[in-house]
View 1 (cartoon, rainbow, N blue to C red):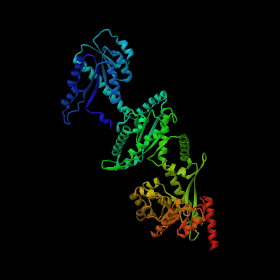
View 2 (view 1 turned 120 degrees about the vertical axis):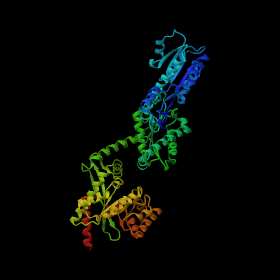
View 3 (view 1 turned 30 degrees about the vertical axis):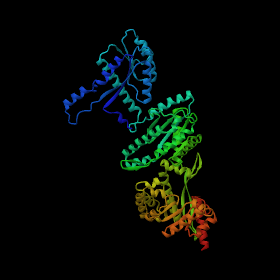
View 4 (view 1 turned 120 degrees about the horizontal axis):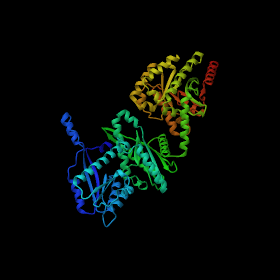
Length: 624
C-alpha cells in the first residue's frame, strides 16, 4: 500500500510497438527483451566504490527492464493503449510505424493515442523521407513528446531511445507520486483528489450525473497514536486504506456508482481523514448504502504489532448538485455532515442538509463569542440549593455556570458547555467557576451564612491536567475557604477513562480534605468495583430516574437500589431533578439523604441565592 513500495531497484518501462511487418516486431523483441539493460549511473557508482571503498556494501544500482507489447496495426495499437489505461499500467512510450496497410496509418493512431494519454512519448518509425515532421507535430502535440526513428535502425539506437525516454517517464512518475500521493498509504493526497474532483464535476455537469462525496474521519484515532505510538498509528492508516479499497472493489452497491480503475477517487486528505467520490449514481441514497458497508468493514477488529484494535469511523455525505457545485463547497458540506455524524454518536454516516450550515454558522458565532465571554463578564454563577430531606435544612448549593451573551442572549448550558469542552475553553471557564464558587462560599461564611458545602462540577479536561490537585489547593488558599466546604462533582465516564490515574488524583484531592461526589450516577458504567476502590463521599442519582419514580417501574427500582447501595457502603446520596412533592415523598420514604431540583428552588443568581440562605436562616431561628 505504501508509496515507498514503488521505489524498487528494478523498474519497468512499458513499451508498445506497432508494425505490420513481423520481422520488425521480432527485431524489437530481440533488441528490448533479450539484451541486458543499462544500469543507471553505473560508471559513477563504480568510480565511487573505487575511490571511497565499499565499507557499507555496494551501492544499489537501479536497473530498468522493458515490458514490450507488440501489435500489427494502428487500430490494435489504440486498443492496447485503452486497455493499458483501464488496467492502470500505461505505456511509457509507443513505437508507431508510419504506414501499416491496409488499415489506418501511424499518424491516425498517434492522434488518438494522444487523446487517450496526454503524457505518453510517441516515436514515429518510418522508412520514408516524405513525411513532414512539422505537420505531424501540429496534429499531435506537444513537440517534446514526439520523436522520429528512421528505418533501417540500429539496435543500439532503439535501445538508447527507449532507455532514455523510459527513464524520463519513470522520473516524472516518481515526482508526480511524491507530489500527488500519500507516502503512508499510497493513496492520492488532497491536491490530487481536489484536482480529480474538479475534473469529475465538469464531466458530471456535461452528462447531468448525480455525484456523491463521502468524507470519512476515524473515531478516536488520536488516542491510538498517543497510547500505542505513531508507528502503530501509521500501520492502522495503511490497514484502513486496504480495507476501504477491498470493500470498494468487491461491493455490489458500487455498480450504481463507479470507482475508477486505480481507486483514484479514494484519497487520504491528511491525518485520519479519507475521502471517496462516487460518480454516476442512480440515486443519492445509494451513497448511504456504500457508507454503511464501509462502516461495517472498518469496525472489524484487527491485530497490529500484537495489539488488538477496533476502529470506527464517522462519514459525512454531500451530493452534487444539491449540496454544492464546486470542489470547495462540496468538500465543506461533506466535512460538515461528518461532524454531525460524530455528534450523533460516531460510527455513523450523515447526509448533508441546509440546516447543518445554519447550525454550523451558529456554532461558529457561539464559539467566537464564548472566547470573549469571560473577559466581558458574560459568564456568571447561579447556585441551586440542596436540602436534607429528613430535617428540611439547606445542606449545600451546586454552582452552575450561566452565559448571557450580548449578541445571542441567554445560552443554555447544554449548548455552551459541550462546546467549551470541545474547544478547550472549559479550562479557563472551569478555573473561573471553581475560584468564584470558593470565594463566594467564603464570603457567605464571613457574612454569617454558614453553608455546609458548595459543589462544583469538574470537566474531563480539568481532571486530566497535571497538578490539578495542587491547583485546587492553591485556589482554596487564595480564597481562604476551608477544603471541607468544597465538593467536587465528577462523572462516572471520567473515572473509567483511566482508572489508575483517576485513583491517584482522587486520593490527592481527598488528602486536601475536599468532598468527592459522582454526578449523574446510573447513566454510565455504575461499576461496584470502582465504588469500593475510589474514595467517594456521595452519589447523585440522575434526574432521569427521579423523574419516573411514579410512572416507571424500572426508574423506581433503580432509584431504590442506588439509595440502598449507598447506604450499605456508607455513602451519602443526593437525588437530582426533584420537581414534585410526590417525588420528594418517595425519596424520603426510601431514606434518601438529600434532594435538589425545581420543587425546592431553581438555580439562583448570587444575590437571590444569598437572600434564599438568609430566609432559611431566619426560618430555622424562628423554628428553634
